[in-house]
Image (cartoon, rainbow, N blue to C red; front, side, top):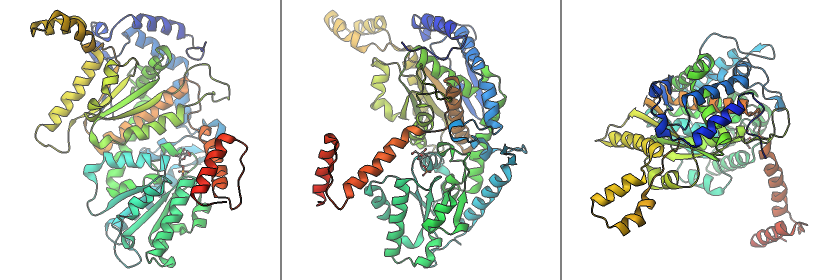
Length: 549
Ligand SMILES: O=P(O)(O)OC[C@H]1O[C@](O)(CO)[C@@H](O)[C@@H]1O
């Protein structure tokens, strides 16, 4: 049998608290004096209300000890100080430096990285000025109107999340497009709507070796040449963001058109770097700065707030409470803000690529559960789709409900309805509706006893489903930045407690290697005879379809 967690002294006591909680209800914990005030914390424009959780105040105090015993504070200090906590790759983890607004030095290998960060920000700012002034022109002298980001994973998901979240701030004179997948349909849908003479492509790839991005960038360039772009003018239509300047130049990007990032920025944490250049291009540099400021405020909170009020720490601990003590397999993030519809996708990479690990940072197999399945969507849409399972399914799925008090779009009573439903879901999940109440209501409406006996059990909503409410005044650049940074730090806290290296991703490599091999087999000129019969049948079928030998 698996252990619950690494051997921290507090685990036994936590197990006892979990056993008690299993026999209790969230409703019963509401009787604790001062629970609503104690189980809430505010930082960087976000308030976390975690009173609707299946944990007593004492249990929560024990969870805080878990963070202490796991050395979360020392590990946090090491990350912010630029220590090479990504041991397997020998790298520092410093996405926080990208949004650092103070005058602290951030040292990596004896060198302060902040001048390079600021220099890149100022290059981004000038690029935005040029494009926004209509002075960045294509081969025929027309100003840029379409910006196409070619990138995948961390070179897409965070950008899309931020830019959608900033929809009210988006420029009307520019259109954003994304080419992500190697599925030719993805490129085709963009090429169908852009005007080559007014399009700027951003080839966004930290490594500049990612197959999807390389193949799409090559096809986009070939298409531009076909459309009449003179080869000599390609610098007016293609820029790149990469840590691999040599590869980007070899592709044909002019060196002055390559914005850098560094090996201490993980792909899934890179939206704050030049990887996110699409964000200020489609809004303004000032808005991007506000996004960074919000993230910085969350960094400050994470570093300075005591553990018991520390939002990322509390969210991380509560996640561990359900994953490791209650065997919860997944965690849902439900945003009551349509502009956050891309957020779950970004969180999936951020969390699952970071903490979907089976060995510790020292390479020892773990004997406890690590990262859960992360999923989610927007409310109220989800209420008419998957919330049925949240309320009456057999699985325990803790939920975060993200909502804003105010909308950018004051249309009739829409926002009142939206917020009402965010709260209603929190209440329904936590407290449900019990059978005696349902029976009484049915009887009052004149239902027969037979009807009541048949229907009442089906109508029961057991409740006791843990919910965090994460509330902001309004979805603004600062609150959006803080929200994304909050989840980044939550992932850090959980990785620290599970003893993982949250910053490598060796699990994605095998698929890449096999993909290369199978691509060779699918496209080889001469006949292919693969020993694995299961694979061979599909190779032959595909090759026949494409008239290959
Ligand atoms: O920015 P790149 O180097 O193209 O990588 C894209 C994505 O691919 C991954 O390496 C996974 O394959 C992610 O970690 C990364 O965000």
